[in-house]
Structures are given as C-alpha cells and as structure tokens.
Length: 329
Image 1 (cartoon, helix red, strand yellow):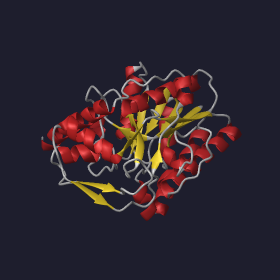
Image 2 (cartoon, rainbow, N blue to C red):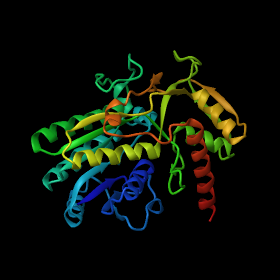
Image 3 (spheres, helix red, strand yellow):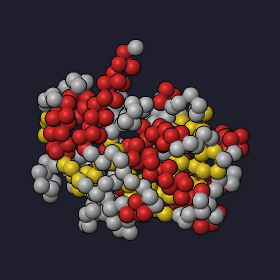
C-alpha cells in the first residue's frame, strides 16, 4: 500500500519522503501545488502530482491509482504574523482544505492519517515543558486553524473508523545531514534559516522581535527540533498505525529551550561570522516560551539522533550555501 504525502515537496514533507525511502518504503506519492515546495527536492523514484489538496476529483484519483492506505498531511500555511494579518486565508488553507481532504480520504477508504500540527495550539502555556495532556489554548489564527483540524480529524476518525496520529511540532530547524534537502523557501521566517542567511551575507541584518519577554534574556525561548528527527517521528507514527496502534496526539521536541539571542550567538560562533542584529518590538501572536515534553513519541521507540544545536546550525549553513550555488546555476 502507498503513502500519500501532501505538501511533500516542501521543507518538512520532503524530509518525510526521505525518511520513508531510507526505511525501505518504496510506494510514495506526493501531492503538492509547489507554492512553497520544489520538484527538485524529491528523489526521482517518488511520484509527484501537482495540484491542490482540495481538488477532490484529483485526490480521489491519486488514492485509487496508487492504492493509498495512509495519508501524511503537511500542506499548510505556517507563518504566525501572517495568520494575524490574514486569518481568513489561514482558515481556508489550514482548516477548510483539510476538511475537504478528509472527506475525500474517508470516501476513498484511507485507513490512517498523520497530521502535521503545531505547538501553537498551546498558546501561552502555564506549564513548561508543555505536557501532552495540557488543554490547548491557541492565541493566534495559525494555532486555531490547526486545532480546528485536529478536532475534525478526531471526530471523523470516531465516525468513520480510521486511525490517526497528530504530531504537534515545536520549532523545526536544520537540514538533511546528507545534504539532499533543506529549508528552501526564499522568504521563510524560521529563525535559524534567517540567521544563517545573515551570516552568509544574504541579508543585511537580522531582526529580533521583542526583548522584554519574561525569559532569562528577554527574548523568546523555543525548543528546536532537527528536521530529520522530526521526519523520523512521522515514520515511527506510520509504522505504529499500520501495525494496529491506537490513535494518538503527541508533541515533537527535545525538551530543551534556547532563546532567540542564544541561537544568534550559536550561529555567529559556528559560522565564524558576525552580522548586524536589530532589536524590534514584539510581533503579534508570539508566546514568550514554549518547550516540549515528548513522552509519547519516545514511548513508540523514537530516539533523536541530531539533538545538538551546533550541529543543527551547521546543517542549516551547509544547506544555505548549497542552495545559493543551486540558484546561481
């Protein structure tokens, strides 16, 4: 049976594809509209279908033609400040289209769903590290759009009998250690991506949004999970479901927080380059600190292999350099 990976030509989705291939899964089909993904990020043996997850006729045809039994849904909009400025766009992309995709999957008999969610569903948690049974309380439209999708998946699973794993990501960073894919979106807002661009001279400076948070140095504190480790968590989740495991909602993080200013210093040290840092007011929708407890995924046998911030930064620098050379050819 095949796995359908929506958004599989994007940052995290393309790493999921590699994780599946590396583990011996050879029946993978990617559905991506290439709005933020890249066809060259996929190995040639993977089938790419260009289209929208809300195109029910297309999705149904893909499921039937490839014998899809599992859906890994990554396609989404993910920038918190953008969601504050364009909430209806985010509810369309992340909630309405997920509902349409789910309807098609149910109709076509898909047995398992893995959903790309976010720590933003927790909002401003009053417990850190954040336990997986903490009641969600999102503070921005991005988090709300993802939580609505979580609810739809759980309700549909109870009604229609499929099983699911919802993975709530903390801050994703780094690149494939073998250099096969990485964060490639030109205007991505991930801190480590932006900081490496500044270190390599691709940006004139780096903005830090808020230094008056209730954290040790006043800047936001986050749990950075390396992207290949995150992809491996998805592969473990798929194996869990296909072997008859129950539906689960799980955090994905390391349980270690780093502030924005700490990350910037690591990027400067690892790159050996200084760059201008500008201190700016807070952005709307940013929580002060959020760090994961990830007991459930570890209970399934997931063991991080890249939980080292220096290594994550080195991967991001190497990928940014390789991406620059690719774009010049």
